[in-house]
Length: 402
Image 1 (cartoon, rainbow, N blue to C red):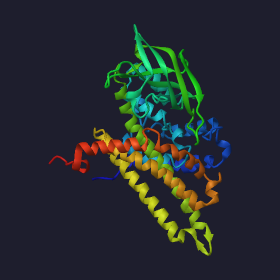
Image 2: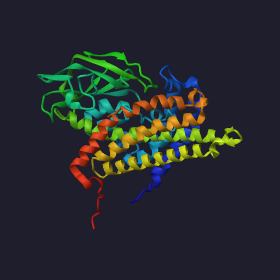
Image 3: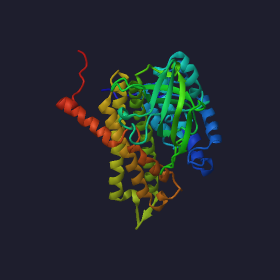
Image 4: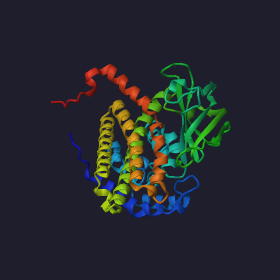
């Protein structure tokens, strides 16, 4: 088993780490650079994006012919960690959700015409995008088979009726990928569509207030009220919407984990820095056994998460689905992020609870990690189902050809 990365990937990782330290973290420290929703404001974002593009650190996840760097998932795992040592990082490099996953699925599943119309503007940073799948009860969430939004075919067009909610980025998005029901077939009943925010029959009902800081465009409830789309709006093919979601959500869950590892590392860095200089009762916090135990456990958890993510990335890159690996990584890293923020706040005391550090931002953000792209319990059920089917082979090693 080879855990080395190529010199090219290391070059990207090191340059991203330097860019984050030199360009992004100084801006992050100034609250004036945040917008009303506690994310990076438009002016500093555009300035940083221009610098990132000039240094060739743009869209690492896409193929060169699409406008990216072609690093693959394993290269992304190494680099995304470095990006998200800052809460502003991923969006600067055009590697933030939901654009990240949307660009990857459009690159894989779109026709050339669709890539030109829908993908290229996102790659260029001209527009933002959103993925509209989750619905209010009793509609589809983690179980897409419950989807109620319908697309009725009328001649050469489809008429969409339904409601979605917690649609990330919707308020600032111009390009949408929508998943709707076109039949009651359990395997081929869903279809993915592409549409613009200005298409008649579509509206944003509200931006849903949430506990934590928000991605650009928030999390919105949207309504499809007789929106009509032409046949060339179908992505991949009619009845293949479930395949589109599977193609998108596996890598997207993994890229979430990559980014969350970066935030977890940042939490540990802030905790270690403070523990190293804070004294109490004549002893540095860093010299107290109780603090060392917390920090050592956190370091182990981060490395465990990195190994799970890299194993999943390796499995997908070699052509596998990595179902168990992605589910394990999603559960572990989501819980790790919350733990890392909690430990760092505890070590920093009242300072950690204040806005003098970024820890309170990360703490508020971290709670959603156990819900997005499948709640912990859903992934645990997936792992149990796989174990029921595989038995002891659940833990088998793949054997190389002799």
